[in-house]
Length: 233
Image (spheres, one colour):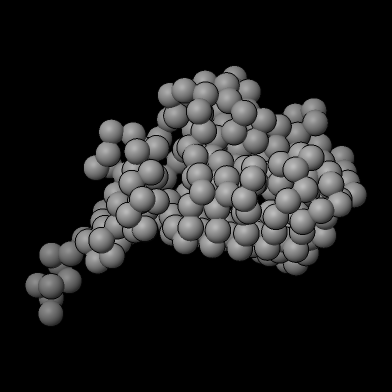
């Protein structure tokens, strides 16, 4: 027993190493699409969606090279595992991650970071153009940096089905910028953008934490810190 314990140095395992091992395990056991096997992160997303397999985003930093977002478009039942991964814009862009017309997709872990000097309207954006975006889950995600809006649900003026988004265990850290918002939920139309649930959240350093725009949304176990206005209804 002593030989076993002395040959395994658990103290050398960093958080990033653990995340890498976790991702490799998913790849091996679940026949996942592993982003490091592809020329770009978008290529991995597209292949995972086409094959209907879980997507594992490799741990480490991923910089988007153009103004195009990391786009999940017309995707059904896709599981995304981003533990240990950080996604950043390399240029100014309207959104870093977009989930458009997605149904029953689940995003787990990771971080979206907007560094100083970048101009980004929405760090993470869930919406529909023509079909529906419904019953998606975003959990364990950290959103941080110099965005105008950290998480936006619903495209302004659309009024069609963008409903039942579940946001759980999400942390959002702003920079106290003028006009900076943590979450904007609703599309400004009394239509079918409704029934969104926000649970176990932490957010800080926004001018306004939450904008609720002609919709209904449920907030439980939410910690709000350092804002001129917590809720704008």
